[in-house]
Image (cartoon, rainbow, N blue to C red):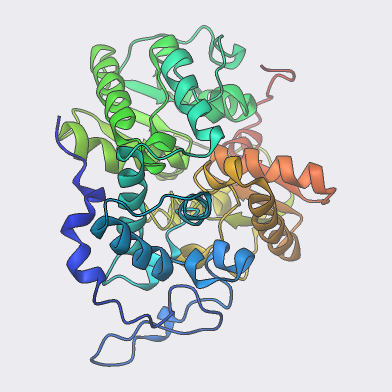
Length: 406
């Protein structure tokens, strides 16, 4: 098993000491990174509000620049005290990636992920929710500790060339998304399969909170299960799972023996091939929320919009912050929202308000974003509809989804 070297801070420490503290990665206003040669093009002008943790805490320590400085200090001093304040600073980073989009020279997230990995290796006491998630992954193979297979996925073959990797959130929190995805793929003539109890958590949370050993275990087990099931293409709903399988798994196990594709990419492809033909009009004005781990991390921006614009009756209106400058949904890689819920709620509330200003329905292509925004919208009494891309595609195909799925 190869070392997950993307979080090896020692490879990047030299460049981080050269950070000029220009503040472009967090400071308010359309500032741009200085590249010592010429002014960047206009599209490099970042939005007024960007780093979620800086917007909430208003201290430089809660930024990429601040965390990078702390990382260099901790790596240089084996006896540096690991306090609750330090843990909060490190684990309130949402991993949204907007800092790395702005500062492509230093790639700040590399330092932050390495910082977390170092803390885990030193035996630091992590926020309690993370220990519970790790325990659930080991005992129940999912982050929630759920014990039974959802009804939405029963009766699907366990072997096949096209395997749907549902992910923890789709399986146990958003069954309607799971059912919609499966039914759309069936309607397009794809013989879809599902691993059933052999599907384990992808390891995303563990990898992002610094427990790379657990991520590596999940990667090896999932890849082996997918190979045994005959997978030639693995289809993913969750942006977190997609980023993990697409980017992280090859760093761990080497080249994958199958293609990894997100449902939005596959839907767009099937529309081009005339295998998805819409029969129903869906009269809605919608805005699209770019999931951090589908957009900035994996550069999938066009396909979800193409799918939406192909559905009869849909009018797409962009939010002020979109594509590479999209704001975090507040999940924070499932880490900051679980460990620091008030911060997570504030971030979600801001994104929901921005979406509501654009349209009555916010559509996204990540089950984690759907689950997060739905929950906070209900809790805060915000009158805005949240929908997954797969559900609107199913509506456009005239597919009726069974109520009461578990």
